[in-house]
Length: 355
Ligand SMILES: [Zn+2]
Image 1 (cartoon, rainbow, N blue to C red):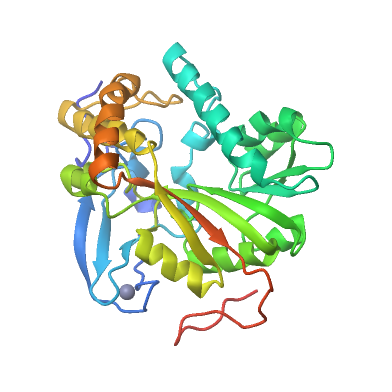
Image 2 (image 1 turned 45 degrees about the vertical axis):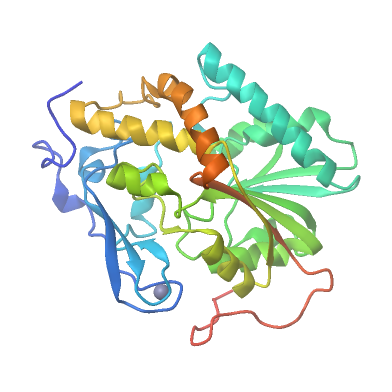
């Protein structure tokens, strides 16, 4: 614990001058530049104490486009700057299974459920790509259960988790949407996992187009992303975990996701609202508490001390929310048409992506 509170100026020695300014952007949905401010966030609440104060104690802003309603971060970090917000202990790189009996048990249940859901979808000679795999915990969990003719591939832009995944015997590559075709081969993949990725990339439309190009005709993308239409966003305001500022660039609801999928030549065939929304309740409540009490995470260690305790009440709350509304984490299924169309998909008035 420390007297340094989020939102206050950085301590002496943390040089703001060396931190590049955030860059302004226009709406990625329609190109308009008129938007209303939805949240002003005065710190990276989750990783304050883990990453440098000069980066953690900045102000981030999320806006809603007046023309198309898209919710996005403006301004936002540049491609170079954003890497400062992904420390070695970042969630998807962290120890797995997580420490602690309760978290370990929850993890085992999640893996079992995920395996039951996904493995039947993979053909006997099928290829499953986990794009943005992080530490590749799903791939590690699935590997002992696949057939010799099936193939699991992990791709992530960070070298370290890829090296660790290879040590575990999983096929894994450093890559992103720019080189994914060279890494796995065009039209070669049956099933793509896209867990908490689409909201992290500066150009989700380009990402979906590139993933479409590596899918076989009829192939599927199964993804997870925050649901920005959930009412706990309004309840928690700037503390809402779905912002995850400044890592989330564009946030989706079912409607905007359908639009982006269609632009990329994919069909949104299913959208479900997950119990993982309980994670958002816990993190949001923790961020609020941390701000009020001046807590910081320990350098080199994440995650927050009270998270498992907060998760207990969050589970029944999410159940009630699921019964009467839509929790703040949604899973989606996108499908590539069986007969691959040669039509170029895009938004009128926008230039096509660079290859
Ligand atoms: Zn717009």
